[in-house]
Image 1 (tube, one colour):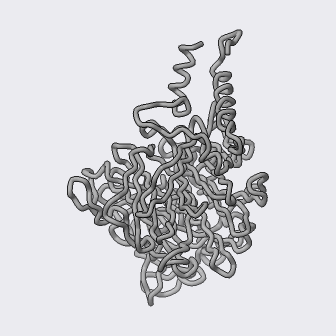
Image 2 (cartoon, helix red, strand yellow; image 1 turned 60 degrees about the vertical axis):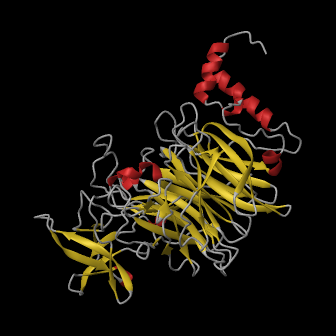
Image 3 (tube, rainbow, N blue to C red; image 1 turned 90 degrees about the vertical axis):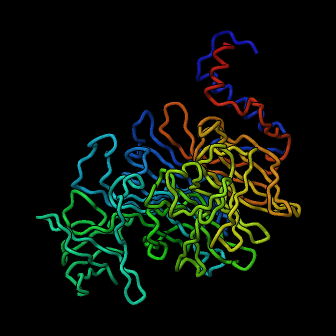
Length: 548
């Protein structure tokens, strides 16, 4: 085609998108929808009309009723992993055609005494944080309970601001765990012992006697914003989640926690959050958080009925630098109590013959880390954990568990034909025509560039290995975290991070596509070759500059 003028970058982009759409829908029966913005961020580094700077971290669940629930981090001040972050969801009762208004699961109180915008790194770091949602439904329970599970930090910079020495989060008494409170004298700033929060939020002194203080541990307020508020008698004196600029002498341990909200009405309303961390902690772990997206309930084998949620941890030796390790948390009693599985890196055998452990990994293991993950179960009962990883090869790694996530095999499966751009990914397992498949969605790179989202179809082989059949482009340009679900026997839905132009990173986009889109007329990726659809935006614009 010959144009009468030089095309602007915007025009080139629009033509490219149109061409991709035409290409993607040319196969008879194959379908991929247009982009639908479910959570819209601001523009030009400014907040949107509701005052929200950006949305991140998509979660997606199809419920037993067929409802789609989309979850997100609602980040008010900036795109970083701290500050004012609310856990929010939207519902669709027509397979994603229309969506109800945003619901807030929890939005914790900001510290009113904290100054704003002190520096680039400290900006808005004096608020408690919720972050990184996982959605999962216990379809075997009487109420078909839906869980939203997410991380919590006291005020600070989240995972990037954790202390270098451990503080005890809980005290054990009579086979119960109670949240610890550290009391710091307002005059000499010295700690005055460890208090505990017990039944009904009553604060007990170090000598085991009740005090006149009590903490809000179950909320009835809008957005559950008063959680952590502490009262002396009837007077609110502060919040135990504030760590600086405090009006109260009490604070929780400077650690991180895992909270749970639930819904018994198909996501229409949600409970006050509950802390489930106490059973999951052990001394070798510094950080423990969920791998956002979707969990599963096991359907096959000895552990059928178990709720499994991806998680990952770090140790005290090297934290994020070289100790990140994938694992799962799980429940065998419909979400009442939770257990921590061993990490993928616990007793993992490396290619050099070294056996490593998540609690002792150090700077030698920078390229042996695995972090956020996606979990599926095969018909043979095995769990497959698809790993975001730091390996130099930038390709997919998969861990296998044969005991429902309690432990993992020593060796990882490596798939060199599947790029892994060091970013969260998602997967679902399903059957069709008496064959077993895995659908994986992730960024294509190159390297660790979060770009060009692909849907990748694999057939499960008799030995549990995966034969990759197709790699189909879902979204050109920026593509980061995502969550995919099977909507019905023929259609899939994916919620993902994407932005373009002057949009703040990111909008959360919803798309649907069908089985035919995955299987008809696809072009297999070939190592050493680059197809047009695999070009990065940068490379594409370079070519356009030469042509025009």
